[in-house]
Amino acid sequence: MNKKQKLMLKRIIIASLLLIALQFVPITGVLQLICFLAIYGIIGYDILWKSWKGIRNKQVFDENFLMAVATIGVFALAIYEQSGDYNEAIAVMLFYQIGELFQSYAVGKSRRNITALMDIRPDYANIEVDGQLTKVDPYDVAVGDIIVVQPGEKVPLDGIVLDGKASLDTSALTGESVPRNVVVGDEITSGCININGVLKIRTTKEFDDSTVAKILELVENATSRKSKSENFISKFARIYTPFVCYSALALAILPPLVNQFIWQVGANWEIWVYRALTFLVISCPCALVLSVPLSFFAGIGGASKKGILVKGSNYLEALSKIKYVVFDKTGTLTHGVFQVSAVHHNTLAQEKLLEYAALAECASSHPISLSLQRAHKGEINRNRVTDIQEISGHGIVAKVDGKYVAVGNDKLMAQLHVAYKKCHSTGTIIHIAINNDYAGHIVISDVIKPQSKEAIQDLKKAGIKKTVMLTGDRDSVAQEVAHELAIDEVHSQLLPADKVIQVENLLTAKEKDSNLAFVGDGINDAPVLTRADIGIAMGAMGSDAAIEAADVVLMDDNPRNIAKAINIAKKCMSIVYENIIFAISIKALCLLLGAVGIANMWFAIFADVGVMILAVLNAIRALNVKNC
Ligand code: ADP
Ligand code: MG
Image (cartoon, rainbow, N blue to C red; front, top):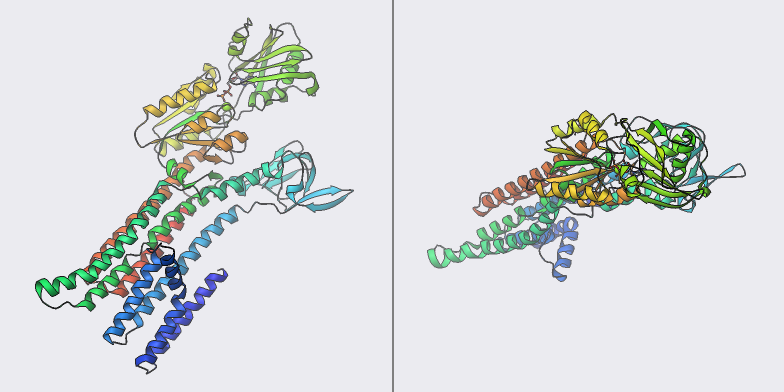
């Protein structure tokens, strides 16, 4: 509990004790009234103050106003009737405050839950100077600096291991509980916790561009993007509260007037004013107004426990309606780590061919390019390469040792009018031309991620109508992967722009009120990520552009998390609807009972606080995503 909540708790306890004590003190008249008013002040001063502020700011109708009018009204009635029964007004205020305290505690708790998950912000980085470690602010570490991470410490910045080996706990980032082992040369992301070894790391990014900073930014901004349901609720409250107030006014005035002048049976003002006040208490919309955003908040928190970052509640709502999932192949369903399976060379030696390819590819971050660089065993001297041009969906042209080198697929060769040899090996074929003469090709093949097949099955189970794979790769490779994974539809040899066209076709053909998701790693597919109803990016492997463009980021690149994200979203949405329906129907029932005089004010406050507590407890359920 924070300070404010503790103060509230004290006020509640003191007011309750005084109220009980006062029942046994034999005082009457003005003195009694003063004592009750004092207790009323203790428990309700902030509500009175807030409703007064609301009136002054011309934003009269809120729940503070409802409570203030109702309780003051009950006091006034008791004075008018000279009944001396002031308990009711105080009890209403007391229960209302208990409800408020409970909800602020619940909100605080789920907020803390999320920030605890996100407790990945590193406080410092260790820099080694003359054999001594000094702690510095991670902001002050430049790219290329060498930092030391000791056992138990968080990795503060993204980098590459220079020395040492260790197991890393990545669970805060990916939800994956199995530690990841890293050795010299491995890339590591900030936010992981070093379990056992001492690591020397050369940083590759500044703190602001590091994984940690990006994730924190995402999570911090997530709750500010409102979903349709949330907007609906705030609009609803804006219309509903004044409506209720005027209805209460009507209930207080009209029936007595009708009684008086039409039926001529006496006005009975007290009864109708009391009913109107009860009506006000019942109608307080807090359960709704509070529980809906809280459910979304908990849903986003639950998803992030699994390494699924949802950038806003609107995307949670969109996720729950996904019926079509379109995949990119390389890096999404496959590892994107190609092995060279054959080199068919013309005039040059095999090593030379690989060397040219690796040099030309030296600046690209395409999975193919990284694989070719890895396949070339020797050192890559970037000074030998100039005029690099990457043609997406085709390949690369560059000047290596002053020669024009082209590395890419059939399309690239056709574009350059190079007479290339067709190759019938299975795999992706990378042709190489030097000074527009065909020099041979490299056959590379990718491996399907072990979880991809289950990922497609999971999606079917989650009610997905159609899965589609789009790829720039050869048709034979595409068909093989699609067949292996049981994907419904496949389109191959697409340029990035063709992928957009394919997605647009699917978007026009889809069912009404269903959503299409595109899942990619962002290399050559950032445009489709934005074009789809919802873009899902692979976070660990994916490019920065993809993570920017996407609405949902899967931190551990596991395609099975797509179905999980959909299930979490569905659960969250059903909780939201449950709460809306539950709260509205209980309210409607109570209002009816109140209007005909069956429900009194005690009943009203119990109904209100009860509905709110149940709705909040239900909302918190969205945090639990174990079985999604
Ligand atoms: P995918 O849709 O499978 O992710 P891309 O659109 O990234 O594929 O690339 C499509 C094809 O273009 C690749 O299969 C490859 O033939 C060629 N290509 C793209 N980039 C490169 C590159 N850097 N080097 C060589 N070939 C490339
Ligand atoms: Mg790709």
